[in-house]
Length: 272
Ligand SMILES: [Zn+2]
Picture 1: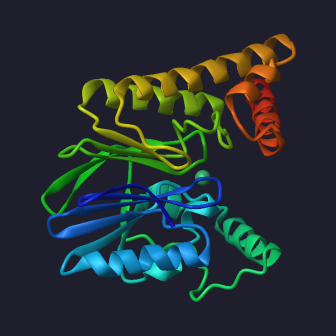
Picture 2 (picture 1 turned 45 degrees about the horizontal axis):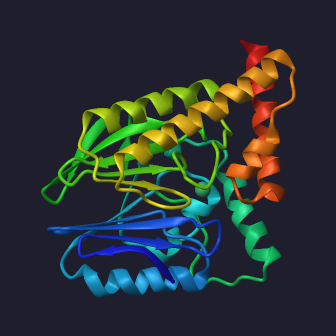
C-alpha cells in the first residue's frame, strides 16, 4: 500500500481508491488511527502496521465523518477507543450508510474478514472542545457542510491538522449538507490556520501539505468555487465548467458531484 508520508510519529496511508487517506499518529503512550479504509488488503496492511508499532500504547480510532468510505474499516479495529462528533453518533442515516458499504462490496465481489457495522463511539465530541491523548492535546471543531457530522482535529503540540473531506487538492468542495455551513467551516479552518503554527494539513482525499501558502491557497480555491456556484445559481448563468476540468482531473465522476452541488444550493436558496 502506498505510504504518502512516513515518519516515526506520523504515517499517512493512501488507498488506490479516490486517493483516500488513513492517518496514524504515534505519540508517547498512545496511537491515534483515523478513517482506516478502503479495500480489504489495504485495511489488512494498515492493521498489520498498527500491530507492529502499538506496543503498550492506548489505541484510539477517530472518524472524521460518517461517509461510508471513512467508516468502512471500523470492524477490523475492535477494541480501540473510538472518537467522533456527537452528530456522528446521532446521525439518522446510519442504515443508509451501511447499505452503501454493502452495495459497494457487492458490486465488486468484495469479501471482508470482519463485520460491517456503524461505529460505536466512546468519546463523543460536542461543539469545540479538547482532549488529551497521552500527553498531547487535541483540539476538536465541528465541521458541518460537506456532510452533517464532520470533526476537525488539531494536535496543538505538534501542529498536525486533520480536516476530513475539506481542503483537498484534488477535489473541489463536495457539499452534501449545506453551502452556508460549508462556508462557516472554511472560516473556522482559516482561523485555525492563521492562529496556529500548523505543521501539516491532512485531507481525506489527496495530498497532505506542510506549506502554509498552499493551505491558504486551498482555502481560496474552495471559496472561489463556492462563489462561482452561487453566482451561477443566483443569476441563472452557466457555470464555466471548462475551467473546473482544467483544474480537477476526473470530470466524468466529478460532473455528478458538481451537479449535485448546484441542486443543493438551489434548494437552500429557495428555503432562505
Ligand atoms: Zn471521503
